[in-house]
Length: 411
Image (tube, rainbow, N blue to C red):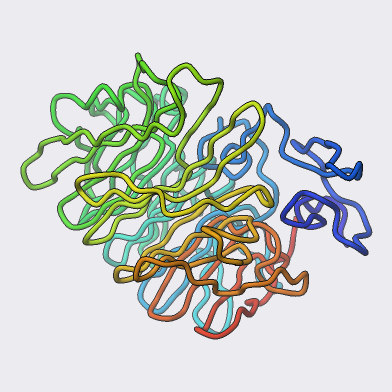
């Protein structure tokens, strides 16, 4: 084993060390606890939530272990972003393209790719957008956001001349011909915009004169379907810190609708809850969540059907929960680190379809391409692509089994 691998590579989903694990591992941001049988088990340190470790909600100073944190499909190509330096021997700095046969870098050496971690990818037409902790894309200065047109990189003007005031972009999604970004900021480029902004391919725009109070402190997650843009965030003055709050922006009418808060625990309980991902379909909004109490943690999936929230199932105590969602037709795939969801045995990836859970792989198997932690998903037809803290970093499901794509070389 290579020195510096994340400790996650040596762990079972319940945090115990897998049999036969040897070598050197990085324990940065991991803490040790004693399991019920007295044996050591590991979990992410309380000072760093799982979403911080996986680049979803944490500050830019958070360390990112080697891995793939984002995947996206453009035409017939798969793009992956994260923290890596080579793929199958091809220099590819933190972002790469798979054409079905081989990996390719984005740009020419020595300035291919991006000079920092890629946390999210989005696609508008044939343009790929990357978001992360970087300030250069290829040979172009680009703060935290960059666009790839298939030939060259360009900047979106985010934070130029004012970079230190725009550190807190946390999420993005494509909607129609536009890119939407959310976070904690007051400006998008030279335009005043509070926590949400729209990029039309040429310039930035604010979303109306104001946003709901539910998003006034932060916007953590975005998802879109048709004319609807969904946002999850925090209120500056939240009467129930245990509640998860989302709102919906109608892009056609330019109006907001506040969704009912998701109250997983009573207001006065010693608990903390937050969403980890969002995805929308033509009939519903799906939200994965993570919640802590003094004695237990809860990880599961919620569905908003336009009238009420429904709980669709939790992953149980063995594992660290759900970190990625992806939709195809009216089915939704969930991924992360777990052994079951909603009572159905499933190793790290499962699908909610026709009101029940289906496992893409039921049993935990150390030799499987998805053993580890899955942090990102993309779907095309029956094929599912998974990226994360996996031994091959990227795995592919062909409708029957998982297989790894050529492995990514670690730094």
